Image 1 (tube, rainbow, N blue to C red):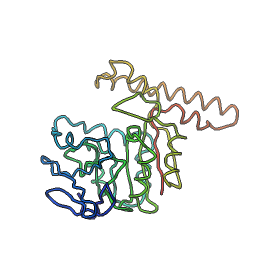
Image 2: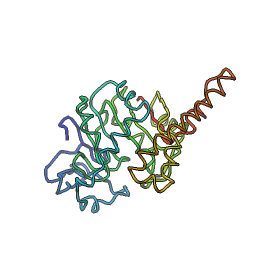
Image 3: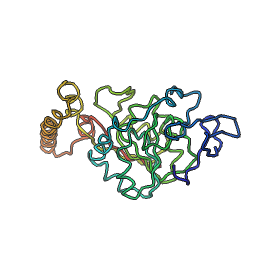
Image 4: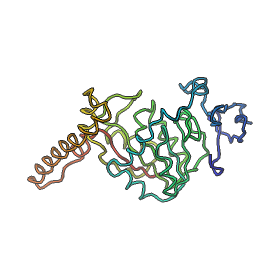
Length: 279
């Protein structure tokens, strides 16, 4: 993990000194272990539902990693464009998964700190995203792709993200809306829901755009054959074409009224939503 990152206790909020044997808070006495196989520190408070013993017993198998899924998220809609519009290079990858986007983010010049709820070869810290082990105002950017639907308290988590961002810093990412339940997902939010979460956390400017369509997400997951990667690649262009044709019909209908397509239509049929929120 980068030396410029200051760690803090997730129990009491005081600074924590780094150690190869594990981290200890001198204020409250909390001890945070290190995953033996990877050397990754594990910062999980007693109030978190995460199981520290399971995390420490987790075996890292590189052959089981899916490094394509993270990179594919950045090819959705305006997401990469929103990232490029932000200033600053110190980035927190919030919920990095297997870490497939780490290499290209670093090649683009970003200084990256990555965390997830399990250790991996591209992870710097294991923690609960509702209790970030970083001091205030550490990062220029926080990126979070397909994570917010998996948070059990997105309002709380968004406040933590705002806390570790510098003034003027930005959160860029995506979240599920009209997507099927997956991987212990809790809240699939509309554009109004996402906006409310970010504004309550103290973000002053929120932009939300369409991600992938509901046709891709719901139709793609419902039919069993689409869960076979080779078949999914063949059927995906057809699903995208159907959605584009439908949106063209909506634009035509509103153009005849002399109006633009409203948000309730433009964002209301999205499988995922893309966002940028500025602190």
